[in-house]
Length: 278
Image (cartoon, rainbow, N blue to C red; front, side):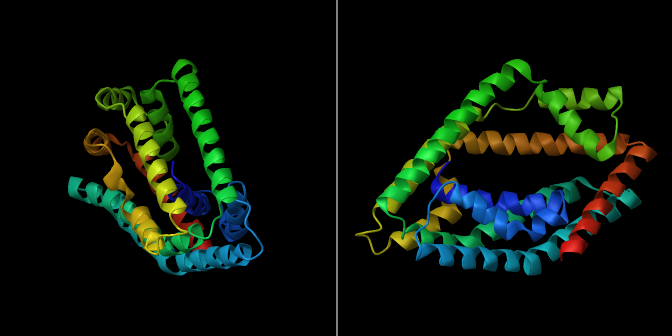
C-alpha cells in the first residue's frame, strides 16, 4: 500500500473507529492519529507542529462537515427499514453515499498530505516504505493462515450480519451461501495494485527535490489513484458489489419482526453515538 494511501487510511480508519465504537475514541482521535502516523515516520522539529496542526484541522472539519451527513444517511435508512418501504435503488444509494463519504475525506486531506509528503527526506522515506513493506508481508502471511484456519467466507459474512439483525434463519443462511459462492477472488489483484501504487508514490516522492510539480502530482495521485487499478480488479470489485447488493436485497424481505427491531436498534445506537460527538 502506498504512502499516501496509508496516511489516508490512517485518518479514515480512526474516524470510522470513532463513528462505530465509542465517543471516547473519536474525542481522542487527534492523539490516536498522531501516534499512528509516528509508527511510520519520525518527523523532524519543523515538520511535527505542521503535522499536528493539520490533523487537528482534519478532525475539526470532519466533526462539523461529515458527521451531519452520516446522521442524515442513517435517519434515511432507519425510516426505510421502519416503514418497510425500502427499494433496491435506495439500497444502492446507501452504498453510493458511503463511498462519497470516503471520497470527500480523500479530497479534503489530499493537498495537506501532499504538502507534508514532499518535505520528507530520504531517511524518512526509507523508514516509511520499509515499515509498509514489512506490514504488507505480514498481512500476506496472515491471509494464508486465515485461508487454512478461519471459518469460510460465508460464515464470516453471516457472523457480521448477525451483529446487526441477530441470529439468521436457515433460509437466510442459504441466501448468503448462494451469493458468496459467486464472489470473485480479488486478493492477488489487490496485491498487484498495491505494488503499482507503491512504485508510483515512491517515484513522485523521490522527485520532490527537483520537480516543482511533485506536490500537485502527489495530491492528484491521492485523489485518483484508483486509475492504477488493473482492469480485472475494477471489474471484479464492481461485480462483487452488485452481488453483495443483490444478497442484501434478497435477505431484506425475509427479516422477521425481531430482526427488523434489532436492525433499528443498531441504527439508533449509531445515531446516539454520532449525536454525542457532534
